[in-house]
Length: 185
Length: 317
Image 1: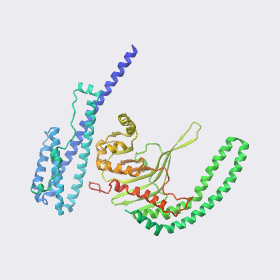
Image 2 (image 1 turned 180 degrees about the vertical axis):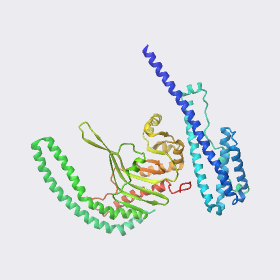
Image 3 (image 1 turned 135 degrees about the vertical axis):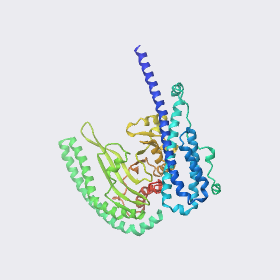
Image 4 (image 1 turned 45 degrees about the vertical axis):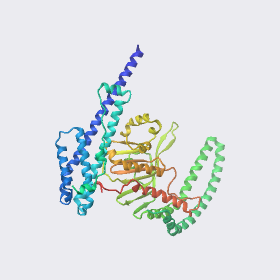
């Protein structure tokens, strides 16, 4: 009788432990995504400053600069799903990357103190976003492992936990920026 | 960056004259040690014979204390010679590597900095060090020295035992990114031996903060990372820095540890042998030990390039 009771208690404790660990991982994913969001916002906040600093110099990049401003407006409109946020972010990374490459052709701009400071800040934000993305992927991998591996997968399906996606770069973004196209913008 | 040929040329030109003077001094010191040893052995033998008459235990005590006394006399007699050697030779090698570096033979990285690095959490009872080098390499402020840190325990008989926390080269450098928290990179044992179970146990270490699991498999095989912020740890440990740390570890062949605290990077390279000490019982005129001093120093100085600390493309210039 006592034996059965002890076994029961152990099983209950085990289930509680698994339940809590699943909740922990789900929340960690949300937590890190919130940080990713915050970093992305930091970058969006730098856009107006960037555009105003470079547009007088970079006559040929008007098209890209307009695109960047539009992306920012859409991102800040506030009604995006997570997937749409990620998609916009990828588009922005590509456009910004193009601008930074094009700067090579404007020596006046490269020597401008304001611009250099801005470039440093932008690099920093990009690295932080990259770090946040990596942390998000780690959190999601942890979460996915827990809902798919035995024995936590049993409990996870009872709680209707679904697999989440890691941050991926789409095939289009993976292609290198075509510098020639930039000059025709 | 100097190469071996340049060192050999420098050795011939500037070091040999110093070494000749030191060689003469070394021989004199050896004579003194020899004389002192003869005297001490005689006294020691008499002491032990007398002690045996009293008790066996007393004789053992006499034997051991004889060794301790000999070592103290040895240290005393060689002190001047070691100091002259360091001023004459080590200092010159440091200047040869980079004349913006300053060498201080009795200086050491402060205990405050050592503790601040959070690499070693044990209590520190004895903190020793020497051969301190500091200066500016490019845009990075650096300092490093030999450090020997110990803690003491007392056993049931009340005898003191000393245990080494760390012995080797300790390097502190300005890091090229701004950050607020702390991230510690330690050599990995559990993951290597125990796989998943090892990782699980590592994550349960309360003293160390959160376990940070990174993506580089070569890096993860060698190191385990703890930090107080998952994102900041990855901001610091970019994919390129992780590769560089792995390469550096392969270069040293030792169980190195690193940490990132207070906008600085700390690197701990353990060594069994004493670095930068002159030979007493062999001639100092050979090139081989000079090459060893040079390589040990260059290893520390090269950390700046190995970890790419002079790349300042972010907000920290």
